[in-house]
Length: 244
Image 1 (spheres, one colour):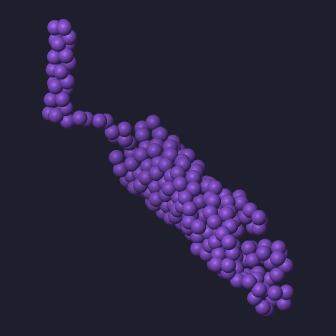
Image 2: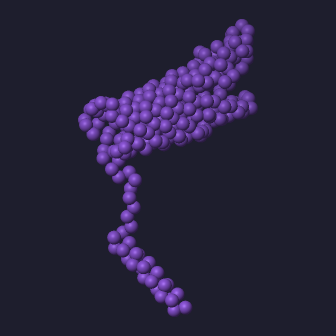
Image 3: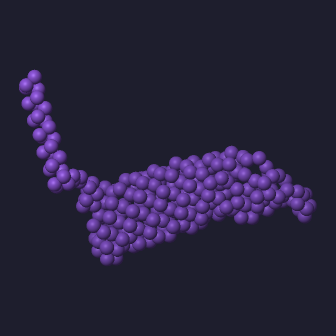
């Protein structure tokens, strides 16, 4: 019994001593990003729909055409070349009005007009990359990331005429619900040094994909549940700011 009390007293003293050291010196945790090179980059890009998203097939096509966007990245690069990346883009991708009007005209056998329509996907992802020096003035980075896409959509007006093409049979406004969906990105960046370790000009290309599910709504018809693969190839340029 006495031995047990002695062990308890020793443990209590050790804990009290450790607590005192923590109070005096403070608890210290090593920051895993200490020593990493920080890069913040921003710029503009050309967004090109590919796959089903750019298809003009009435059943599964997205009828999207090329648009523009902005990007903002933050990256921490370690001495071994590995990097942790945060990547965000916002795009304006309009509908191909002529192509969708033609598809409806052929399907319905009636002249159809389409006005408006624009996808506005916002993408934010995180992931890992690898950076290496290709020349004294050029570094190249490749990456793979996952995250979410939030797609909002500006509605379009659809008008169907009779066989003479003069009297309106049907007109309505259609709009997709804004929804979140899982997204992935594969990308490459080329950094051309302007001011060593401070500023560089950046050229980048990436491919992003997301399976977007939403209701297509209108004033006259019941909501229609749809699925669309939003696939974009972005090519852009901007400036990268480096700090340590």
